[in-house]
Length: 143
Ligand code: TYD
Image (cartoon, rainbow, N blue to C red; front, top):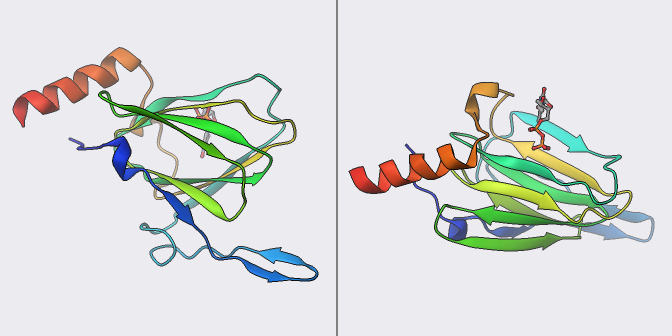
């Protein structure tokens, strides 16, 4: 079904066009990031101490960017965990399919920009952690 590792979820340095009046970060699907962009959304007004995420996806690729402020992303492939702190608007975190993610430690005023490879599809979510682990175990068993 999916063969995923937190090792494939890399931080990507995005272009930054800098001048005296500020910065621009353009992101081209399939050029600056390894997927075509079908959807963009952003999270904001996140209450302090709140956490988000708590799910995995079957097919979706995402790039997470701290457009403003900072937060931590805990990635989990069912075997390994790694935590990535995002706090720069010209750095993105690639999340491949089959990775459980929790988003924590949002700074006040943080804006989380998400570029996504698919349109919204509720059926693409795995929202139960035990189900996630059993899907991975099944896959390892069947090779
Ligand atoms: P969810 O993806 O669970 O948020 P997060 O991972 O940031 O905690 O989505 C929260 C709610 O918003 C859920 O009811 C589905 C809805 N939603 C959409 O309708 N369209 C979208 O593109 C997204 C990302 C969420």
